[in-house]
Image 1: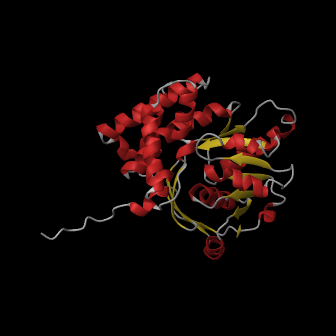
Image 2: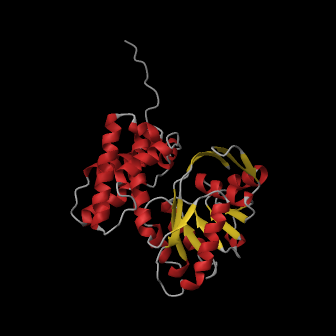
Length: 321
């Protein structure tokens, strides 16, 4: 299968390397010429729980090179979804589009530009850290779930075989995959993980697992997740696990050494996906008159960090008396 992966970040490169290793025809779409050239020269290198893997995967700046793809996987930051689909959404009605992005809101953006029956959504619990261009640390493994973003829509039934084929391809590449009917419930279940972990790690600069080592951060995590659960249930979300909060803590332990994507962004002084994670809980809570004070504070603090990189104090100057 020809697979186009948009976004050579941590998850994009992880998928590209393992899918290529499994024999798929993979091409990476990038928007940075220097990074694409580096990947084309040096390939992708994955280090971590499966050992060391190096794969040559072509990277391109030209969206038309994705023509003929049967599957396009979106791995860009959530705030770039609209820009990407506007620029390459004219690839025709053929490919299926799979978003494996963080947060809530990506599916709704894709719906504005693509046929509903071509939109897949998914979540994965694999932890990946970007070490440099095409260099990834694979820090944790977990289940991957995929399904149609709009189940039951006209024209979808004939593509069920395609969905099964994608699932099998991911399985062969080492991603334990399940097909689900109501993917929105799983997206919100994954959102709880991001709500509990990402902003807190970005603010404290701790790896995922360390959030449970301190009573203070564990309490903040618990309150942020409880607020998100209340908002989700008000939206009629059926969370996948009987104890969603305990699931978030389990993911913390499973990915204990992982550096969250939001912390990676803050360390690189880049924009984060806070608006698509804790910011979702703030907006949805306000719509329903549900108090969400912890998520509000986390969102405001991260947005302050984003806006104040140039004013950051990096070293205390000694004072002469």
